[in-house]
Image 1 (spheres, rainbow, N blue to C red):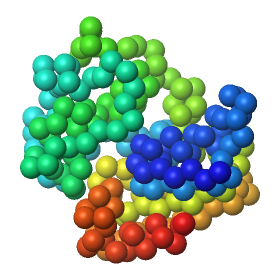
Image 2 (image 1 turned 135 degrees about the vertical axis):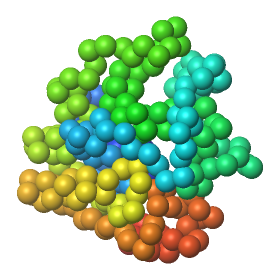
Image 3 (image 1 turned 90 degrees about the vertical axis):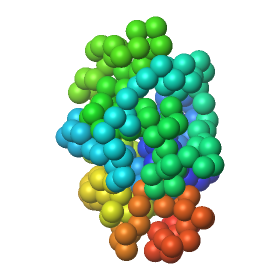
Length: 217
């Protein structure tokens, strides 16, 4: 079985390498992770990061966000309506789900929200006690690889000009895998390739990134 994931989906793919056995499921034979978080112990996650093109105030969690942006049940996809101003082809400040990501990035709240979640009833108040060292390491593929819990053959690709997730995390994940004698390969893409480059008209204009995906396959 091969699992492929982009961005947050890439992170979820990597976690299958060390979480599936506890559910009596064999880990994937191969995981391909693209432009994804790999190191939640990185101080990057608690510092403000303003994506290219984002403007002040576009990360506000207003009433529309709390009524339409927080779902009552897990969702498997989120799309931005055609015609809305977008950042990098997929993130639209006028879209409530996009504003959640902008809020996490621009206010350094990624770990608070990913590990603690948000509650419609309490709104801005984050759930306490979820951001602990143990919880961060449990969700960090790099930490789990370092601890010897990750052994899956892995292919990683990451744009060097990614403005949402540092490419250095992928480099550290690869180097840690090799140090632990885990079979892995890494492709760092340059030439101005952005995060989620493949949504730009199916990668047109970002041939270096598309080549890295094809080589990984």
